Image (cartoon, rainbow, N blue to C red; front, side, top):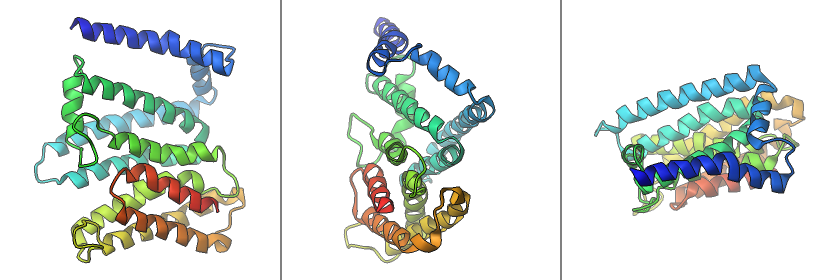
Length: 277
């Protein structure tokens, strides 16, 4: 109990004093960083506050839904994990389309929260440690070690890195969506279709199927065709870029079929790089 109180006291000190002081030193903030974040959010309250409320509702609903699903022994773990991907699509696509700068900030905050929760889980810090461990353990697979659970980190980084690298919409407006497209759409469809309908496997020892890979590639291309009209203001013309897009989606889909370790972090960067060519 005493150790837990000490941890939360140090966490509060780090969040409110040490980290802001370091940020002011390296970034030359004129105001306290937390105050800067507050001012940034209320700078466009209708969109940003609405987005915060939307995220909170999605997170709360997802936690309740995941908890009930995780108690159902009939639901296989691979399908449980893909629900995370669908939630990522639901949360990140509207923000990336209409508030990319705010999403940049939110990605960083989410990584900090994930890191804090992982520390609490590993050290079983009261009162959340055991609850977080029980919840997260239902979604682990062979890529997670006995101590650390990294799959949720890799999913968040896979969605965030293409957006951080893109900075703003440019002549490759689909590039910021690379993580969401390859993981939230392609990987999810490949797993679900392959698991339910897959017959032809890529290898005798592997689990990935040709049907799943084809579904993943086709779903990414279909969503791209839907997204492109909304990006018309950037000057991006699908008729001039359809072949590079098909190549990028196909290569990423094939990599997903043959990659086992941390594909959530690797495949989005490959897809992003191909979209930027």
